[in-house]
Amino acid sequence: MLRNTASSWGPVSRNLHWLIAVMIAVQVPLGFYMNDVYKELIATRSNDYSLLLQVSQLHHTNGFLILILTTLRLGWRIGNPTPELPRALVAYQRHLARLTHVFLYALLLAFPLSGWATLSAYEGEFPIYFFAWEQVPRIVPQAIDGSHAPYEFYAAIHKACWRIGAVVLGLHVVAALWHHVVVKDNVLNRMLKGG
Ligand code: HEM
Ligand code: HEM
Image 1: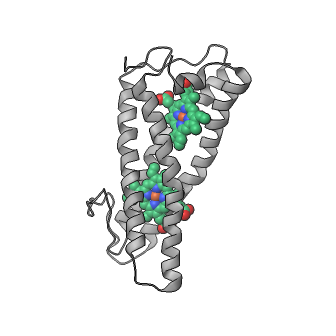
Image 2: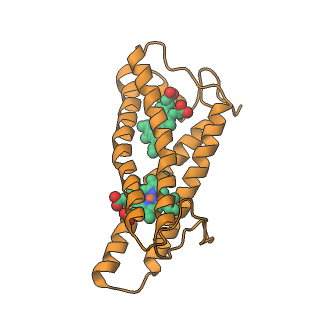
């Protein structure tokens, strides 16, 4: 049975949850590394962009895949029942859990979209990759007057996603462990194994 029920997550929801979590765990350090490679290039005034292009190709492609999988996951969620939280939880805990999940979904969309907008706004020429495709269309207009400000604007949003995301994700993980270790209910197990 692939679908969710009123009390359990089906394999599609569970596998997508953990696949996206692993992809995020790769994507965030990759983003910081990409920035380090870029800074190193500037500091050494090197013209060898090959490493930057390779890392960028990975970062963009993985980011677009996260966007696609998140869209699939949201579509699946809309077409399926959502398992109820344990009845023992008090109202504020239920609201906090749902609010955290809405926030996480918003971040999973805002993260790749803001990265895509950053490069779209870039005043120079830099590839936007999806696998070997180097010319993914721009989603916001390029800064044709040569200004770097639009790039910086979207880059600031992209970076803020991580600062906000780290807090919300931390809350999410602590809550999952609290359910498992302190309350000893099946919230973590039903996302790991279903049932
Ligand atoms: C879920 C998807 C994504 C995550 C989690 C993510 C994460 C990150 C992180 C952590 C950084 C480093 C931020 C910093 O140094 O403070 C970064 C930088 C960057 N990312 Fe992403 N990214 C994602 C998707 C994308 C996509 C799809 C693109 C473009 C198609 C992209 C383009 C960029 C660019 C251009 C930078 C450098 C921004 C700057 O100038 O500081 N990202 N990303
Ligand atoms: C980048 C990493 C992660 C993201 C983006 C993420 C996102 C989400 C989202 C959006 C939901 C809500 C599902 C829905 O209502 O459709 C969820 C559920 C859940 N997550 Fe995560 N998660 C991540 C990592 C983790 C980790 C590391 C754990 C465990 C330590 C975890 C444990 C859970 C559990 C147990 C649920 C089910 C809650 C319930 O049954 O209502 N997640 N996650």
